[in-house]
Length: 159
Image (cartoon, rainbow, N blue to C red; front, side):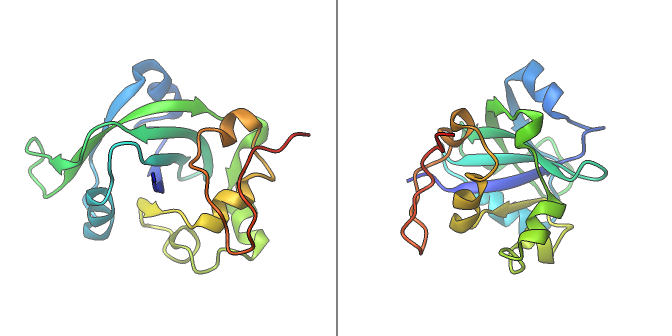
């Protein structure tokens, strides 16, 4: 079953608009050892939530891992690279901001909240279920079906 991750990008370096243009992009340039170790766990088919960092601080898209991570031999610093394929650009009404995540009080132990400088991280299952409050069915259908501890699934909302 695919896992879900969040990867941050600075819109001035690589934005969701750049991703739309390219459709498939190498996810590289990560040098933090903790983030590199997360990327090394990626498998083909895993889902990656694309997060614009800095001023925007919000989830703006959904991608899928299409190649296994490999050492990035083109980088002088230790790093890995894996290709991501864009699945969906979120509608502005679906953007989920860091302020919303923090205000929920549900994710205080998640790296996005407690270690904000980390650029790549796993996504907790209960976050996927929580996204059902914000996302359209077309976006939710990109996520793997999971069951939270409460027994609810993240099946698309119908309203």
